[in-house]
Image (cartoon, rainbow, N blue to C red):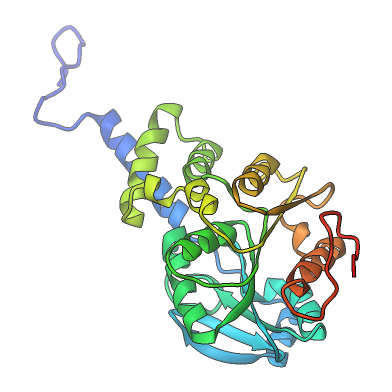
Length: 289
C-alpha cells in the first residue's frame, strides 16, 4: 500500500508479485518442456505408411511394421514421428529385416498431449514385448535416452544403435531451461518441477549409471557439429558402455544424421553382425570376412 511519502509497503498477507511471476514462469516452462508439436506427414511419408502394416496402438503407441525377418525397432526423437525413419525402413527391409516404427506419446498418431522420457521408455518396453523378440533397436536423440531407460526397465534387444543421444538427462533439462531463457537462479527449481512431473528423482534416471551395466553390443553415432546434443555426450556414453563402438561424423548436425547414407550403411552393417552368416566388420567398418 502507498504511504503519504510515496513509499510502498507490501501487505504480508498478499503474495510477493515477483514470487508469483517466478511461479508462473516455471509452470509455463514445464508445460512447454512436456508438450511436443505433432509433425504433419509429408507426401513421401504418407506413401511410406501405405507400404507398411499398421499394427494399431501397441503398448499405448501407434506402431507400423514393414518387411519380414528379424525385428528392428526404430525409436524417433522429440517433435518427430516414426515415418522420419524412411531411409532405415528401406535399408532394413532390403537387407531382410522387419522394421517396426513407433510414434512416441503425443507424437504422430499416438494418443496424448504430454510426453516425457521415462513415459516413452516404459511404453517401449511394452511395445517390445508385443512385437519382439528384437534383433536390434535404432534410436535418435530423445528416443535414445528413452531406449536406455527402457533397457534398464526390461526391454531386450540383441544390438543397440544410438544416434545423437544424451549422456545426462539432468543436463538436457538444464540446457533446455537456459535455451528458453530461464534465469540461472531458477534452473534448479525447474529441474525439481520436471522430476515431480516424471515421478522419479533424476538420479534414478542416470543414463551413465545404466549403460555401465549393459551388455548388448552398441554402436554410438554422433556428429561433431550437433548443436542440440554435444558430441561429448556420445563419446561419454560410448566410453561407459562396455564394448561399445563409437562413430563420429563431421557434417550432419543433429537431424540430417538420420538420412546420412554413410550412417545408414554403418548401422546396417552393425545390425548384420548379429546374424550368423553375415560378414563381420572391425572397428573401422572394414569387412573382415
